[in-house]
Amino acid sequence: MLLDQAKIPFIQVGQKADEQACDWGKPLEQLTASIAEHKMNHVILPDGNKEGEVCFVLTADTLSQEADGTISGKPIDKADAIKKIKAARAGMRTGTAFCLDRRVWHNGIWEIEKRIEQFVDAQYEFNIPDEWVTIYFQDSNALNASGAIMIEEFGTQFLKSVSGSYSAIVGLPMYELREALEELGFFGN
Image (cartoon, rainbow, N blue to C red; front, side, top):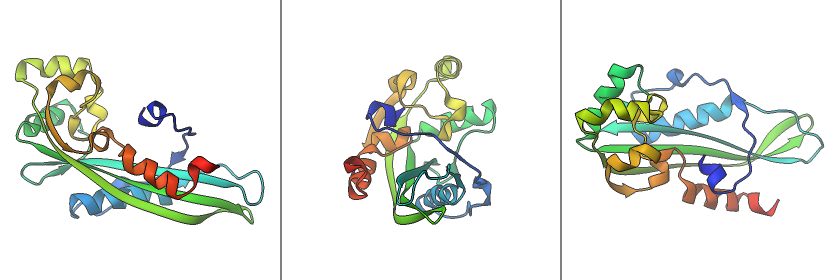
């Protein structure tokens, strides 16, 4: 959604990374970055068409941290989601790490020419009153979001404050990504 809104062209490809294989005992920044890198190491790209062809590959991951320091990703079920939503009332920190490669097709493989990895976070207050929780689940995709928090669309009305990158909370820090894409020559190709 964010790439579409920014008019950054892309093709979605798959990856076969097991996020649970990463060390969940690490601090938020390190864990999120390790998951984005793990995804990059397991990305499935189609073969290139010609020697010297260039492609750009982006992976990212977003995790939330509750005020008590608990790190969480997507909820496992609705009860877990409600617990995460209630924890968000005390304030949350959410971070997104991305891994961006510029790759060149050489001798039948995609070789990494340059890689940029970055972590961006934000602190925010998100408060859904108990009487709104059921409606929130009906009108958002919260069960598929880090910390069950969707601050965009329907969820916007429950976002009290943000300090940091709004788009990092949504799932991709667009300002930093644009800078990284410029550094790798994406817009010139």
